[in-house]
Length: 590
Image (cartoon, rainbow, N blue to C red; front, side, top):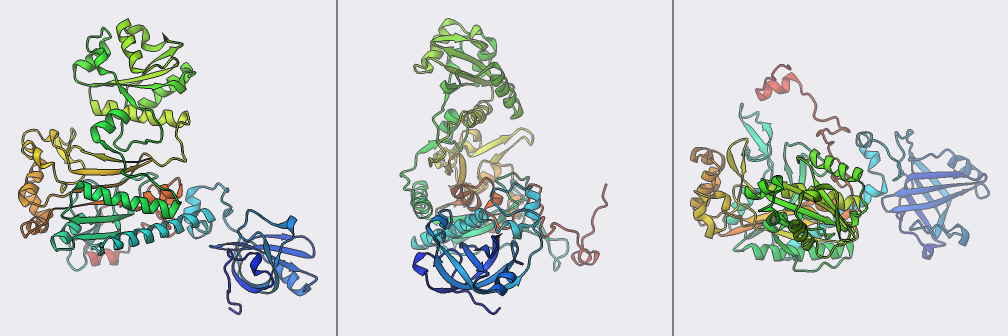
């Protein structure tokens, strides 16, 4: 390489006029104007226009005409101001150009399988196969640079708060509880397996017992589960643990972290304290434990209206201690029957039976189930509508309270999107607290931990864990941003007796507990301090802060929704020799 870079392609301006510089990068575009040949040279810092003039050098001009998109070049030339009419306000360097004196072609490029223009729509599979080309797009480069900034802000903040960054093992013990583990066979111990960690949960608790009272780590985690746009089999989280703290200590510090993140990354001042909703409030008002608070559309509890109703469907739900909820939507006053039917069909796709509806037009009830309600019920409903004169009321009723609320939450979100109620310029952060400690799985006829089995119950409710476990609340908290959970944590159990009581409630036998978690149980007997923590989904937080549509837009080399790495063609088959070394024999395909 004969020419060495002196400047990047994004830093030159009018103050550099008259200076000789050398730029290196890719040919972003080229234009032949007969006697003048223009290219835009690009690197990750920006683009600069370069001019090759036949008047200055016919030889250089002819050589330049062979350049094509994505050739890698080094250009040496004189910076000069563009004429006023030729300035490009859309380019950071749009006031100047370089008159080329010398250049060299460092490498050529084949014709690309797709355009790199940000507006070019190609299948994601094609773009992931050629990820090294896709990553040249400015939008993806901006996203990854923001991700880098977020990592630096995170390290700086927690280091400034006296936290210590400590790495935890990647090869660990399989303790399946929730998502499936990725398993790694051991060659040195045939028939035995390591697991890739779903989180460093037990290790960070061990670090608290070891006396490192403030730990953090930007850590890779692995879960073998079905994917969607906001999940990947390997993901990154900001893992945090603290000793001698309660819930308020952790939430207050995380709010300070959020203030720094938004200010330094987006120049946005967020207000603290961040609002807190109990799980019960979040479900009752928004139908979700991660409510989007950027728009004001609350669920209205109308169960009490129908306790004495002659409309048997609703009365049966009320009699069976179910939940009847309504969404009162003035913006949908003009909805047609076809649009209401579409909402009805939508609810069926997410597990509901349908939606009841009625309209209020100039203070008069019309259509739907209005004919089934008594005058008293309609008057009570009108009172719940708080003075609305025109609008659509959508009602869902179910004997399963949480199911009814969840369906209303889905409907709330769909209406907000369809009616464009969401203020996308708004930042809405909230905490969800006081979760149930356990949730019952009918299929397996047992309780599972709502968060994880090391989450502490509220100690005043501990006596209920044996006989009424459904009434016990967790000392847990989730941080929500614009309807997305970005962090979750809890105060941990630091007493072996309490931990064993929790395992019993989860139907984990003493033998199984010792087999899976024996080292942690033993460690709890050696002076374990009260401790708690939280983990931020680093990929998801990066996606939301960057305004990206998918996690794959903020991860350099992501997997597809079927967990394939298309560029490197993984997972792939391995040789019989490798299998033999590991003592593994593959089952025949059916």
